[in-house]
Image (tube, rainbow, N blue to C red; front, side, top):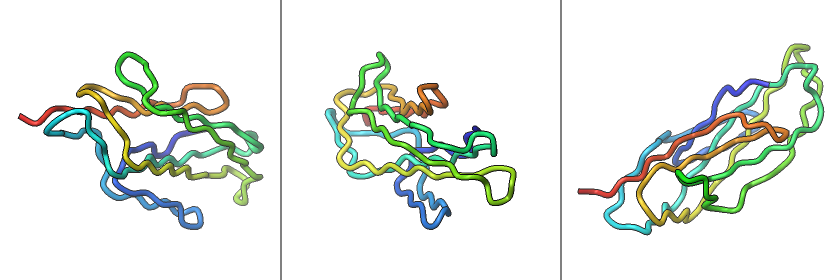
Length: 130
C-alpha cells in the first residue's frame, strides 16, 4: 500500500473516485483560545497492489503534542477489489470535520493507521495572533 495524498484542507470530496481538494493548510492563527475551526477535511488517496485486495481497517486520530486524543478516533473499513488494470487499485478517504475545538496553541497531528499499522502523520500548528 502506498499513500499518494494525505492532507488537511478547507474542503474535500470523493466524486466517483476523483478526489477534489481545496485549500490545503498546516497552520492556523487565532486571536484567543479555546478556538473552534468551523469546517475542514482530511483527504487521503491510497494505492493498493493487486496482492493487497480485500478488506482493510483504517483509523484516524487527532492528537496534541503530548499524544492526548482531541476527538474520538474515526474508524472504518475499506474494501479493495481486484484492480481493473491488473496492477493496482486506488481508494479515496475523505473525512469532514465541523467545529473542531482546540484548547491551546501548539502542535497537533492527524495520525492515519491502516490495519493497525501507523501510515502517516499530518501536522497542524496553532499559534496565537500577536
